[in-house]
Structure formats: C-alpha cells, structure tokens
Length: 65
Image 1 (cartoon, rainbow, N blue to C red):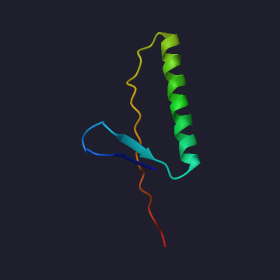
Image 2: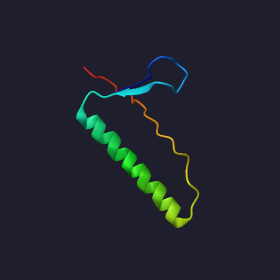
Image 3: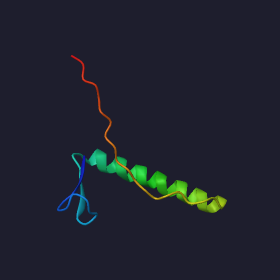
Image 4: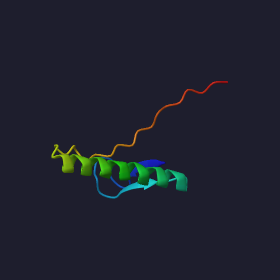
C-alpha cells in the first residue's frame, strides 16, 4: 500500500492511497470501523473525544538469509 500526495509534497490536496490487494482495503476498512466504535464509546461514556487522526506507518522488516 502506498500513501502519497499526488501533486504537492506538503499539501492535503489530491491525496491518494494506492492498494496492492483487496485485503489491504479490507484491513483499512476494519481499522476505521474500530476507530469509529471507539469514538462512539467515548461519546456514550461522556469522555473527551480523541483526535481523529489515522496514521499509516510502515514497519521495517529485517531480512535474513
């Protein structure tokens, strides 16, 4: 999966996410659904709503021979 800004390196305009597989789309959907459920729990409990930021990070893997 690749996330990038299509035209400008430091602007939110024309942001896109490129998926390699349907599984990646499903994982994003599930992750966002969990985020929504968490926010709704906070709302129903009267807790402060956390910042609604979704970060995608890449974990480097160590290759062994």
